[in-house]
Length: 187
Image (cartoon, rainbow, N blue to C red; front, side, top):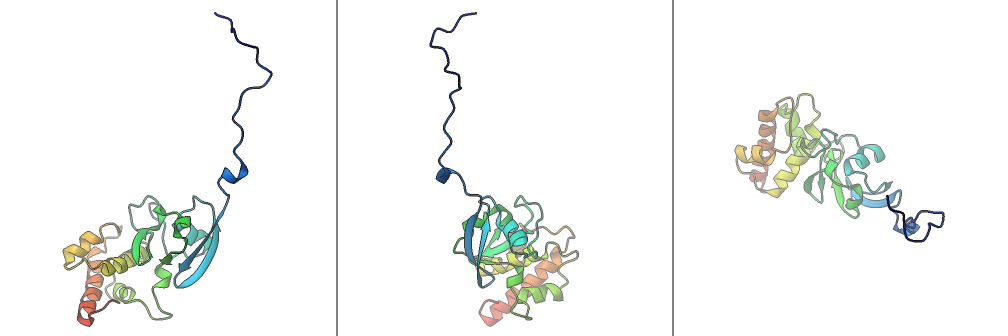
């Protein structure tokens, strides 16, 4: 075995200096957003999902945690009118944005037309997926691409229903879609 030929160590190992405090991620970040029509400010860890911020920090439990991997759609909410999976979105990304959850669709005691149609068509069984289904349907109708029942099925395919209420979900969405075309507007 060969002997080291350089100078002897000075009694301490070489380590990287700690980064300055301003370079370290903060424990919590402030996020201000418009939530269901009202301005809200919250403090969350930078890695907090929008889903967890809604459920754990804001007590809005209508949005459900299903798979937590963006595969089931139970956590669907609307951000600036577009449907997203809140489990895949960081809360800090919502700074200045408008977020609508299932709780924000009704106007007082008046249900959103899709909420009414889901009740009328019995478009749920256990109801766990229903908030995500309704929020997704609102976003889908806003997108304006659905023309047929097959379009509805395809455009809603990211929202799973373990109970199999799909025919009733399509019927509820179709009712609102047909009502929009007669009225020439959106719900």
